[in-house]
Length: 541
Image 1 (cartoon, rainbow, N blue to C red):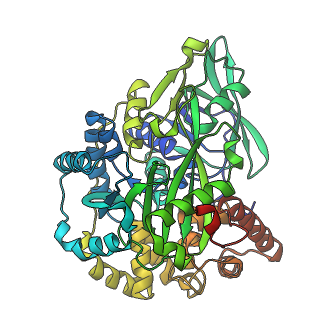
Image 2: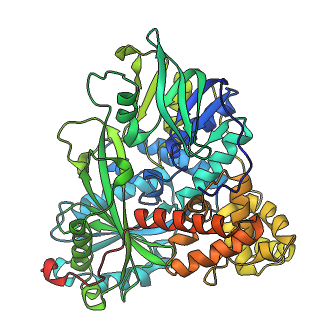
């Protein structure tokens, strides 16, 4: 493990009022709320923040599904929270024109969909004029399978291309409020004595050392690992806490007629399907199934990729002829409150706070359920349950999006980089871009692009190591500065990035080689690449 950030002091013997286990978006949001409420808070994550289900999500921030299931109250809460987040992080959440395509074989009727979208617009408000996207809608209508007589409807929703960057923002907010942050630190067990959770036994994988800490309250926010943590800690459950749902996606190249704004439709067997322009590619999915296997060792199956291809080709016959390249596929397991024999299409949207006092272990709370769209809602509920009273904080952006061009020009001058590089820094780092600009100004090496195909620079990687709690190269290139998710990235790009980052942080040949090997192993385990990019056309017949 190639650490390049500040040395982390030992946690041995320290006491915290609240210890949060799990560094996904839910755990991050809880730690952020508790720390802002003045509680001495510890956040621990066994891998890296947002490296599990949070970084393998549909990348939308929507309340539409809650509305479609009849939960108007939850939809309203999501939309209210979303508006606050857009004001706080306008560089990460983008209101966008969406389309939904309903064919004559759909289980939904166009009339029902129109009614639902009308109500959604009333709840959410809309700043997008559908007439401005008439050409796009007509292009998609022509490209869709004409035999299904699709009705294509417009609405507005919000994209979050990189929830990994939302995680980074919340991480820094939590740290600024006083939270102690530890990634690559596994909870071996919850320390329990006299029917009460008293602390945690930790293994810090960066030093391969074990520490014990004390905590007044412990929050198990480990998502799909929640039941496993209880088993390791000898906590007897009356029934499972969660059901795991594996969601698999594929990323393909553009093809003629492909939508350039998000499209929501259905798979060939009637399940919800989204096709999102993402990172100069198309993100297609999900295929979902109940999965009780190890969340750390999952990948999409060939049959799931085949099903996604079949669904895409059923919607867009031109995709079959164009044979878009399947660049990679990935899977994540999200945990929902336990339901026996669950149909993934009917998975509950609610969250549950399970007090383990009923299991004979007081002061331990397990959080099950939640998503990007509900993370702060879950966090506020959890913080209130723990007596961590918080007040709403919504920071206005220092620069309005309308002034992006001017801001990029000023930042380019301040950092001595191109306007394209400045724009990229702003789009991923927002108000923290000024800090990166000052760092970049200090040397040519820091202003060097991470690889020849990107405008993102070495200073962003160094900032991730020194300020954003990145430990490994994967933490940097897959999450803090996720250039390795782009269409051009290759092993040559990885080697270039190692050389350019290593020249600044001082890696010798051995350290650089270890960083490269670890990164390629993580990237290959995350981004599954089919052996053949052939179209499986016969299977789609």
